[in-house]
Image (cartoon, rainbow, N blue to C red; front, side, top):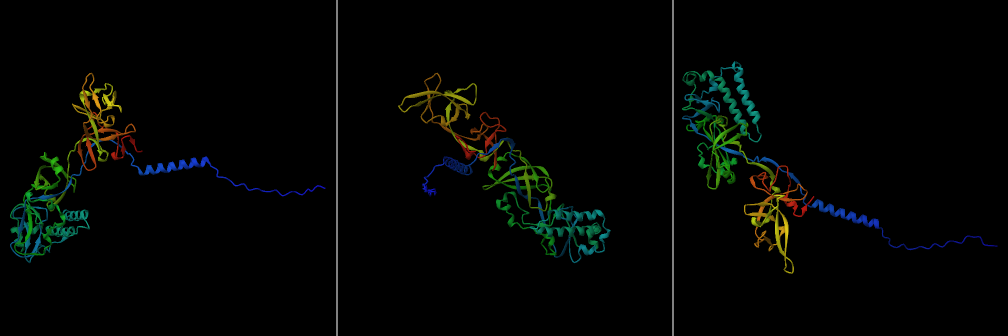
Length: 459
């Protein structure tokens, strides 16, 4: 009888060998390439396009000026409590009372006058003083608070003593020792020690406001004989002096008049202008015949010169580069009649065996003068020759010159374009427009010339 039992199967383990998956290898190569490309992209300098526009430079012509006026400090002849009633910045005539000295003050003499008797016009003066203080308030300069207090007190005294001021003998009949002005002028109740400052005495240090001190005379309750109690500005003619660097001084050297703007209110005027030199320092002096009374209390005035700058094509300074070119004499050049930007040259070079090779080449013109053409140095090796057409004369290429220019990228690759700078500041310059080998408005140039490679651009 046959044995129908199933025989157990023998399982044989086969060791698997290393199998190469071509898909995995290709993916790895592509992935590695992408990593390298991304690394190079993010670490490389990229060429950013800048569109050339026409315009001018605004320039920074804002200055802190020192005001020089005809200032006459006035001293008192006796000691005692002092009271002021003429408002600061107001014009006074000869004989008008300015202040009183003695035990009887103006306020005391007018104590019977009630505020209720004042009209709306009188109150408007007080409101104007308060509004000016509120608009110019600065927590940094607390001196403004004292000035406001003194202005308000003086305005109140003016209002309350109007009848006394108009009385005979300038208020003496009311028991006041009012002191009249001895000449016409504008009243100022502060001194800073610069009243006698002359133009020739001004230095760079004069503009240092850290050491500047102004004394408000109205904060004194009493005075001694000989103390300065106020000063009079006796002329509407005044001057503003500004510091200038040498470049700006040379730029403005031919100006006899100049237009400027007061930064406080934006008002603009013309002024006589002159330049002075004190040692190595330059200063500009503006002679003005108006607005003195508005700034009579200020020694330092913020102004801006309104200068008409040169107009042309405006480009950033970062786009400017310098490149060296070979100079080829004009008599060795054949002009391409189809393109003024190109010329034909008969180039003679030498092979390794010393034999001469002459061939006609086309060269791009980057600039030209009456005697020379500027061409790319890549076209020649030093020692090559240029042959004159229909002549045995030849010129050995060796003379070089540098040109200032930018890289035009209208066609997607950089082309050097020569520029002529006619004006500049720290960030931009103005170049001539419509030059034969230069730029035109709306051209695209490389914003950063250092990122441009001669054989292409980084993107």
